[in-house]
Image (tube, rainbow over all chains, first blue to last red; front, side, top):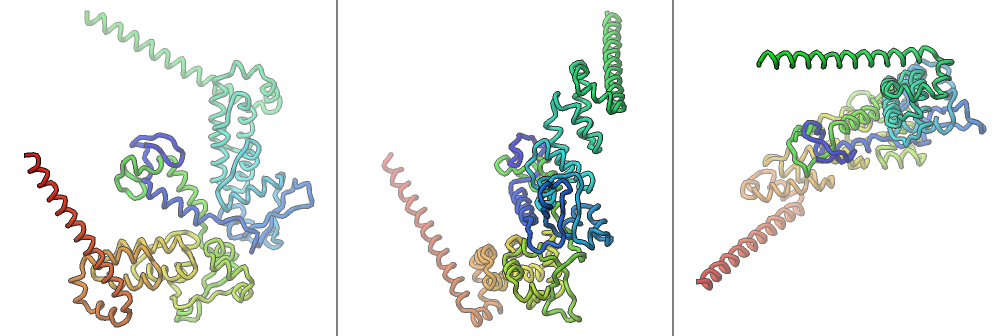
Length: 231
Length: 231
C-alpha cells in the first residue's frame, strides 16, 4: 500500500486513512489556511536585525494569539505591544521574521539549515510547538558527521530534545573521528558540561554493550552446559 | 485495512495516507484552527431574525475575507459594512448565524436537518463552498421517502446539485408512492416546472430500461440463433 502523502510504502498496521478521508482533510486544511494578507492588519512586527529602514510585517492579533501563548499574553494583557500595535522581535532578520509570521497563517515553509535554526529559536521563544516540531524534524533528518557537534550545541541551547538525542547518538557512534576535530576542541573550551554529557553517554553505551556481551557469554556457557548434560 | 478517520474498511486502490502522515495532517489542522474568540474582533454580524435585542456575533475581517469571496468584496471595497464595522445577515436566526461564523474559524459543526438547511442557504449566498459541500453531504445521507420531495424543492432553490441528483433518483424510483402524497399535490400547484423535471427524468429512465431490455432480448435471440447454427 502506498501513502499518497509521503509516497512511502506501508502495511496494515501503519494504515492511516482511506483516500476519501484524506481528500476531506486536505479540503479542510485548504479552507482553514488563511493567506497572510496585509489587509485589515491590526499589528505590525519589526525585526531588530533589519538593516534597511525598519520594514513592518503586518499581522492580525486574532491570529497571533491563537498560535502562540506568549504572543497571547503580550497582546491580551494590555502590555506595551498591544497599546502601540507593534512588536519588536530581537535578533532576527526581516526575512526570517516574515517567514515566521507567514507560518502562523499557513503552517507551510520551505526550510534550509539556517532558516530551520532561526525559526526554531523563534518557535521556542514564542512557544509555537507545531513549528518547533517541524524544524526539529528537519534538523534531525539533515544531521551528519560534519554538523553533529554544532547541531548538538545548538539543540542544547534551545531545548530541542529530539535533536539532542539524535545528535548524541551519532556523536557517540563516531567518537574516534570527532575528538580529532577542531569543533570538539572548541566545545571543550566553551561548554565543558556538554562534553561531559557526551562522555557519560559514551560510557553508558560501552557498559551496556559489555553487559550485553557478557549476557551472551553466560547464555553460551549455559547452552554448552545443557548440551553436555544431555549427553 | 481500516481507515482511522471514518473507520471504514478499504483496499489498496482506496488507500490514502499512512498513520504518520495522518497524524501530521491532524496536528496541522489543529494548529490552523482558530478558536472563534471575541478578543480583537473588528466586525460584528447581526441576524435580522434575532428576536431578542440584537446580539452581535463578533468576528475578524481578516478571517471573513479569507473564507468568503462575497464577504471579501463587501469588506475590501469600502462598502457600508466595512465603514460601519457591522454586517446584517437577512432571514437567519442568531443561533444559525453564530454557528455559521464559528464554522468559518473551525470548519466544525454538528448538524441537524434544520441547521443543515440554514447553513446551506448562507453558504450559497456567501459562497463558502466548503460548508456548502458539508451540508449537501448531510442532506444526501439523510434523504428518505418522507422528505424527498421537500428536500428536492429546497435543493433546487439553492442550487445544491448533488442533493437534487440524489433526491431525483429516489423520487423516480418511488413514483407510485409519492404521487399519492399531499406534498406532491402542493408541488404541482407551487412549482409545476419541478414536477415536469421529475416526469422527464422518470420517462428517460423508462426508455433506458426498455432499450436495455430490448438489448437483452436481441442478445438472447442472437444466442439462440448461434446455438442452432452450431448444431
